[in-house]
Image 1 (tube, rainbow, N blue to C red):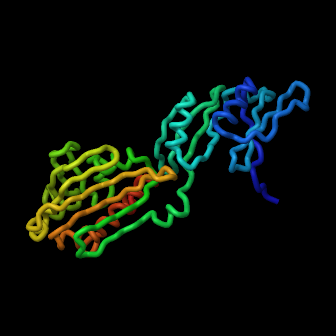
Image 2 (cartoon, one colour):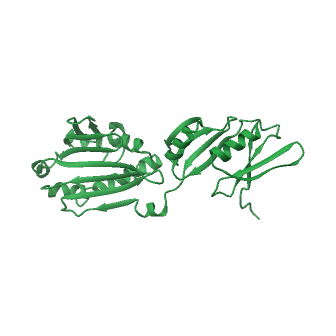
Image 3 (spheres, one colour):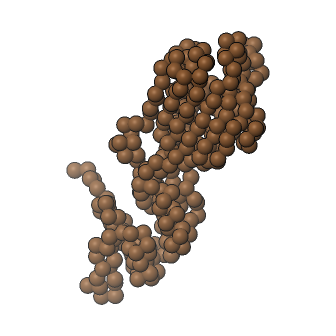
Length: 294
């Protein structure tokens, strides 16, 4: 019969009482055993409140010196909040929260130097049900696109404003933006667009508001189509919020009063997929390391 579960993991420590205080009082584990029924051995066992696997704080394995453990993964619902709580309690972090293709993680150590990984749990079912949300019709004056991305606000902000990253998702057209009110906004043609004789600059505008990494507002105007040029500049705003699970809720509001041609383009009603495709591509890139077409 195959193995069906992991019951206990041994954590090598030098001072059982100090380790107990750390895992139970600081991390919040539930103490499930603490006795000295075996002479010369204090058996301390604890587990996460919602977990099945326990940690045993061991001092009796010569081949496991204190501080030699690496890579034990602990899961929480809100990594940023837990990072702030533990940091305030004096827990040393070797790596602050960082988005990897597989998960959002931070790395910290216990009093003996054992390195533990704190990992963001999966989004709740309620959040999953509204990961993608669009309120739009092709001729609307106001389009709202919303998506949840398993990355920090700082990572998403950088992806939206970095020339290097904007060239890797959506239409592959890099953005140059001066992040100050009154600064310029330009979207440059991708290499593929240039091969087909496209303009060097395909959109222009002006920055209206910057509150990194929470809110960005700028105007934009598509330059490759005489109709969209005649319609003039429209207004795009980005709102970045941290959800209960630690994911970033990105909301894009595009105000399109008097710009039906532009509205149809960004809704994906004509060539390309518009905002829905761009945001889905951004989500895929930040969560997997590769764009949709990668």
